[in-house]
Image 1 (spheres, rainbow, N blue to C red):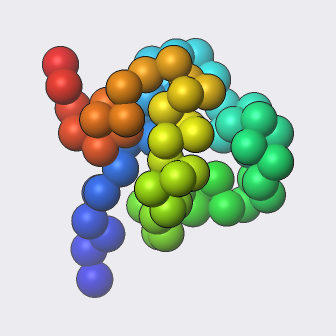
Image 2 (cartoon, rainbow, N blue to C red):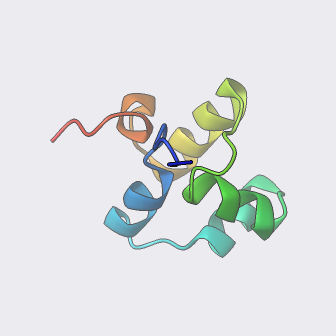
Image 3 (spheres, one colour):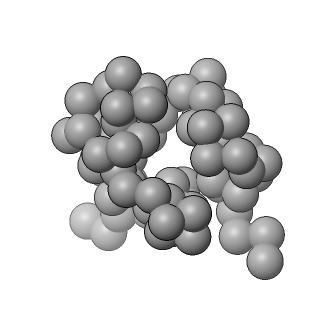
Length: 68
């Protein structure tokens, strides 16, 4: 079964020169959970997605679709 890429968290982390471990620390989440978000194995809820956007200083849309 092919994994559908619903979020761009991994790409935005790379674009902002950040790592998943750093994001996990900022959110108070387990690094394994953030890793699963980055690989689109599971998805964060909308509240968490908004927090991620704020932490990375990007529009929430950038976490969902490529706006470039």
